[in-house]
Length: 312
Image (cartoon, rainbow, N blue to C red; front, side, top):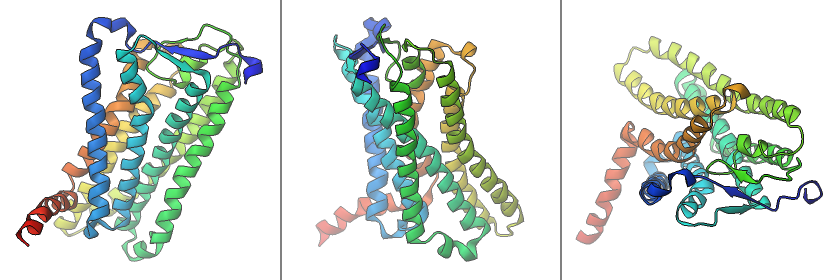
């Protein structure tokens, strides 16, 4: 890469146009980041500490919370530092590493959401085969597959982008090293690269989405046939939480990466990037915990443990 570029670092503008309100923005984003860490960390702790939540659904939810923590941590610390610092540089390879982890977490989330949909499909539509299909071993395999595939696909994407020639300018008019703003800085022709990246994004986003869509088509058909109101209500509750996460993630990601180049808007891109990299990881713990009676019950049991210990 060094033979093809003279750029040794990039400058991330971020909120440079809003210098007067950088401090309030810093505290707002710091609150969002801390809420993300506490929320997702709490979900992981509750699931791991309560025996009643030792089921595949909560195993995948735990994976999702770990992923969201990493996803937010890839970009937020640098954004917060840039808000308070005059030096907004990031090295060429530092930018590549940030993009790799950002894409890896995004791709892994696509696959993990599809795995969670398959889990719900099996539990509701094939309950007699659930323990056989979604066994502990299969859960581990599906989880490893999601993480490994995310890392592998993002590695290819990142190497493809940073193998281009970058000879200046080196100013990224964005909050972090995302694909569209970095590609704009390439000195060489990027049309074919954009087509290839677009094609890969279609496969990464569309394939899991079609699996999710197919799973929920079968789930809704099965729910209509259920005679028990209680069972139907419980199934709806778990499905709505997952569908809300799917809508938030796929809605912003699809609009971000599937638009024609002529429709790109810097302000829109910034807003969407800030939304799916900061707010979505913060909202997911709330989405899953507020509508999930088992998680709330486990949280209450956890709060009572110190009291029982003190009595003894």
